[in-house]
Image: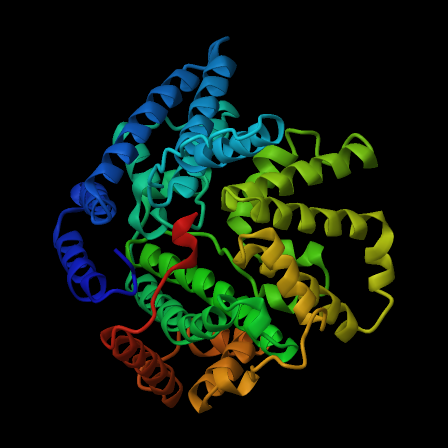
Length: 475
């Protein structure tokens, strides 16, 4: 079930809110758990069985780790291994089979391809599995000494706002809120505001940018000229940001409606002036997860520069692989890891001595080139597209014009999207939408009217059956 679907907006969410707030507080976690499982089952009952089995197994490992005896390290290792095997089995097994088949063909003439298993990827498995691994790690470190229960564990893992596409919620950040949160009218109002902002980012901005990107980037490269290639990647750069940050905004807003504080996942990444800064602002929950549970355990930057560079490459290799089982995702991760190493070697000091506009231009170009690998899964096609961006291989006979993919509405939306991705929007958002103001002021009337307008336009787009995917659902 999509947050941006009429079924969610006008049936599921109102029903849940009604049942939740008329019920005594002692039943509210149970209600959230039941509705969260129903929400997940909407995408397929078999998915729910996988989720429930995963919850039960991880709860058993958690209880063993909580005993705090000499075997808790063994239980941690077993729990992490099981979770990794779950992701590998559902997400990567066909990737390994296809590569083994390819290697076999190099050495065996006329060898038959190994048949792929064609396993259907459960929704959100990368997100909820990482959350379970976070729980096991945090319990092992004794960072939260409160004993966990099956109900609190199940709600932590299956809580519907962040279940399918994040943010990746750390166990220690949420477990106390499950038992001792307090719902307030001010929080609820903030939650509605944040949800509508996210809905507008997704429906109005991301979807329109996505249509432009798909129309261009799905074409044969022979039909794309250089300006059109740049329009395609700019549109995709905006789409993936507003698609994912919009979902995160909706998740944070929904959490607030039920008294939960979910940490921020994006902080205007496209204003970054280097790649190091970009990864402090982009998909924050994932980058901090890898930092705390992979980079630091590997030694971080404690054992000299060479070890630090090795650890960075490992982390970004895994970051790319986490996103998808193709070599293009792996390359995308290594690409970012290499630029981070280049900056740490000394390039970052050089960057800071040049004008900030040039710093920003460097960062955004590097990011956009990286998005080509992210969007086009076949490596030769991705490399050809990057070449076309810089005029390589372009034929004078290409019958393409950037104007063919634009109209007045799309130009307006692209302009708004670019503006909203800047720090100017952040200042407007903080002042207009999220601060408590006195009732009946002109300021509040304008802000509430803006939100109502965004919601109305979003519903019109949804009701029209327009293009409405979620990019991160496939991860």
